[in-house]
Image (cartoon, rainbow, N blue to C red; front, side):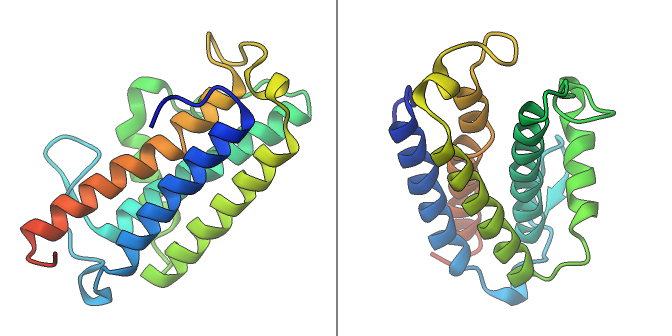
Length: 170
């Protein structure tokens, strides 16, 4: 799928990649959702499928936070307050902790809601507001949204498919 360059393409990418990911997640046996057998976001670590969902949820919520800050005219801390781009492993650990109290279905529901909020958000934007000017460094808002939604959805789906094959689930 090419890099989106307008609102329609961005919405298509977000919706398509999420639908593909969700289809994979629906086939994960709940009894295996919390087994730490999936390569982690930090080299040499293992996470569970539930942690992978918490990770995606964390990034989706950050996208919404960035957009809310932008709307309010506040300077946005990227990737998040207290974190630098070279500390994404530490940020991933925080995402796992933030959602640790949620069972697997609740994590999937929370991700679905965050995804829907992002889609709604993108629908309120225009091509100009999404791609007309740089927002963070050289990246326009639309690119930052894509880099933290549809791209991670595709990556997570590929990881799930590999995990399922190795686990004898596909």
